[in-house]
Image (cartoon, rainbow over all chains, first blue to last red):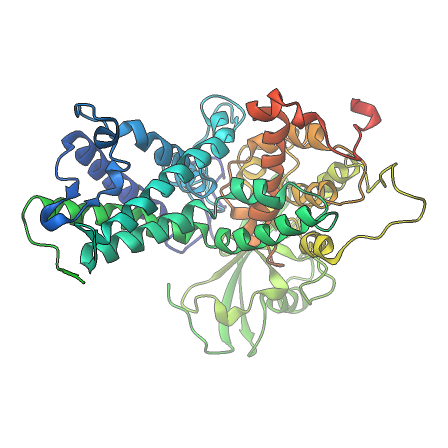
Length: 256
Length: 263
């Protein structure tokens, strides 16, 4: 005869025997490290473009190049003029919501594990979490940023107007593909593009939207994977550009 | 966690014995056969060691949804959980679902779910349809057929922390009924505007998308991604999207009308 099962109301109470705490710990660690790196880079606001040898490889943290486009004097941290969009999209993303509600807010920390006992649980019905309902607007803005990232990527293949290819180009291309995979697999986009319809076959437009919905659903099925991969590719792309532009090493490339 | 594919052998089950007022885990040791599932072991214990052990089961084929329990702390169908998929070097705990009142041993009172179900207006044909013209396209049935796979095991309800930990049964219908509401709200021929019920009485805003319901569903229904999130987005259309409010697009749901009780 053994002890009575613990009350489900005590934080962490569970009869699970697997290492359920590994995932929340890993997520807190990864998101915190990425957050610290991002803050350092944004505050630093240096070494964000490779321009040697006619190249123009722009870090995704600093795209579009607003000081260059609008000819204003750089101030720190000017990147926040753009970064609110992808940051807002990730903060309100349905996948990230799962991550941070579990890992940071312990509501619950894992399935069938008791979370923090709150006097009154309100979910996403009160400020600030009710703002997660505005996810679609951050998606619109983040999609626009992805357009600029594609422009940067294509521009990066031209060195003084001549086509060339280098390691930096490949890294930027992989990054923008991953960011597109994440952005356009968004649940809100899936809803807007066709999910909101109740009849997929009622008109030619409905049939087209249904096909688009099916395509977005494929991306959406791996939204978590796209979220993590694209977060790392953004950080690594920026790190590569930081190291090259600060003179740590050269970007190997060939101009045709 | 070590797992073994070695079939059979001596195993110990710790089964919850008790009722709503008190209870405890009681050890039972038995010889198991290759391929046995947890329900086999529990029924063998009932037959040979504890004839008063209460357990609910029916089909033993993972289709009736009766034998839901918490095995090693996770909601599972006992008839679908093989002993050789559980760690061999430690006892197997079998408990009733925590989200519902215990009647006796492994049997819980899930009648609350049936009361919730009664609050949902069944399929009601749109009034603008020609009499008897109830044809819908395969593309529409494809989306809804996933929801029809639900066997009402209520494990999604059990693992949902809003019901399990927060005990907000009076404010949240739970994932199973979000699935039912989704199947009705997405039906091309349904004539009821269910948004108010989804947002208010069903309490979809309480769901914080932690996806445990999806993880435990024995039918593999993507409860969160295909039912709850689409319903949340429909509520955003109706209540939170300022652009749709400006153009008054949120008030137009063709063919649907508010239910009489809340109109």
